[in-house]
Image 1 (cartoon, rainbow, N blue to C red):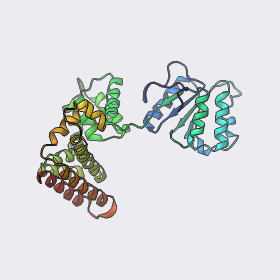
Image 2: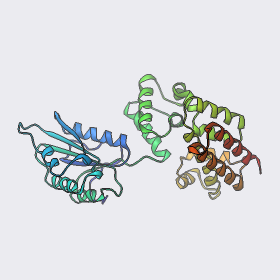
Image 3: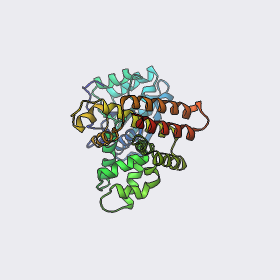
Image 4: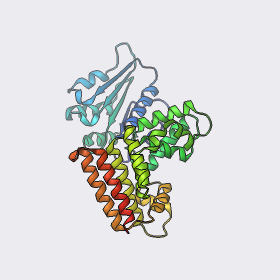
Length: 333
């Protein structure tokens, strides 16, 4: 998006202060954050019984003007147009025209996934200085940790980093699940939320995640890794998530191991896209590994990934073979 359009400070932060603008576009792929931004904008529009949610792909030329027209009874109208990137060209042109001259007593909220599709509409709205709320996909560990901290802060609770990491280890990357778990912990516990508190609620999942299996495998703890694998499969962790955890664990060995010696954890973390606490742990795990061993382990994980995704008939057996190969790769120096 061109920089001319006003923006909110951060995904998931307040969409706007004060009354809603006549037109606002919520841009980004992070669905939960986009939904929250839309809800705030609708609430900021004030009491309006006439709130309409419409999919842009379903609109035919001319329908948008009718939907956005003010009521004969003078009631306010809030029109939420979802998936503006899917609007037909004629409809996109109508959106631009309405944004340039919004009907009175009508608030138009658009959602757009961003990216190349429908970019011309975003460019047109930016030229009109339509306010924008950014909700980009959260992909980095640090951003997910920040999200979880924000959930507890909004609930008036304090959470330690150890609690945040344990929750992420237990539940993975899905923001909806993380938000629900944070709300439950905030409601059901007292005092500071730390690793022990989170583990009491999510012990099975926290101890049996793909990342926990990977940690034990790269540390050469074969018996514990296999036991953790069986627990993970027993509690319903997807084999694909376990191979993902193994892949990330082995890749970090290679990336951290190839970083220049003497670099502080923070510098390496910025380079490889992992939090500093993780870099410190990987550096400890690197003892006993060689570049050749890491390459061998990566090949084992790639084979397991292919087996899990359809080439094999027994995902559990494929994962066990991969874990044994990873441990052997560490031991063969």
